[in-house]
Length: 356
Image (cartoon, rainbow, N blue to C red; front, top):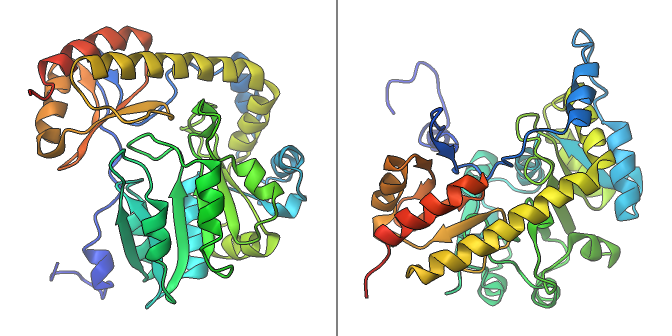
């Protein structure tokens, strides 16, 4: 872009803005953003409605929510950091650790914000291809670590492909990473995991790995995507650096109250999660039966490895009123939404399935 009125960093001028999943019309199913399809619980709605003093700033550190989460993880309050979505913490940590000449390492394809956070920090994104099953190749990632590596992101379950990293593989990986390199375990979809061998962020924190930060969110399992609440658990010194780079007062009072009310109603919410996980497993099995090589699905979504046909396949779903998320050249992600969407998903998938 050459006609900018002021001097913008060239790499920022060339950086595309984050592109969210396409919205759906009134007659379509929105299966493009990994949102929770269930309506908010009445108790959560009541908590939000009660937080109406919008003429006052929220408490910047969300102290009550931090205390609740710290108790859950068995850490001090200063080992928990709250922000407006876990993705904002990713950007904070990238800016705190990395700059020009530094490297941020992650598997690819993974969460589409990862390349952008490296660019914004002025660092270099280093990607390692997913393994044949669509998950992380941790051996290759460990081999890609250099003296310039400052931050590594491990996404489990991996968005958008679905597989988890196992606890054994993650522990072995940490043993090969220098202790002064930050390792982020992005667990945005952890509540949907049913694989008993999957890495568990709480166990990693309990093991005392000082260079690991675990990320979680209230957007997915807890259904608060519209309020933006995420959190990090890790060494207080690392999280203090993240806070220093964050936008002040970004977590609203309503968001904190909704998160607290969600924790109070957690069992009811997790029953919904179990329902969605069951629908996911059923859908994945039925898609495989149509001829799709669906990877292990452990989030609230399934992945169709459509390759060069990704846009064509997504268009077929959209024509049937199913708004899914294409990733050009790679595949199509389908969120687990309303149960009524399952049958039409299977029908469309069968019509565009790979042919022998």
